[in-house]
Image 1 (tube, rainbow, N blue to C red):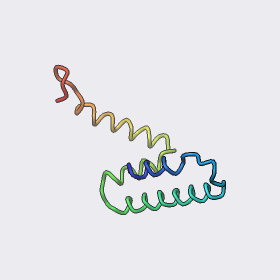
Image 2: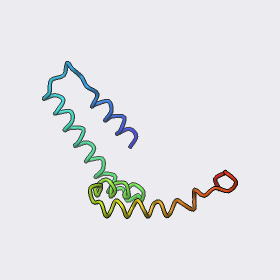
Image 3: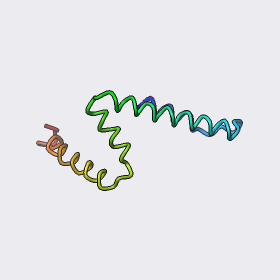
Image 4: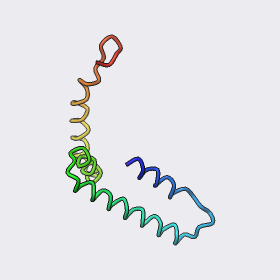
Length: 88
């Protein structure tokens, strides 16, 4: 995913010399590539990657997002407890 973000940053830097149609075409190609990549990840059957795809797919579903956030916070809280200022 880091490579995708780096790619997005590179494509969306303003370029004054490029015409608007070319910029639009590049954005649509990049968007299509991202959708294809998420589709491949969804088929990978790796549990963590599937969670990320679900989170992205349901990002506008407030009850789902809230529940996932709360569940995550409950699960990581014991892992991040400190003992004498150091992580256990």
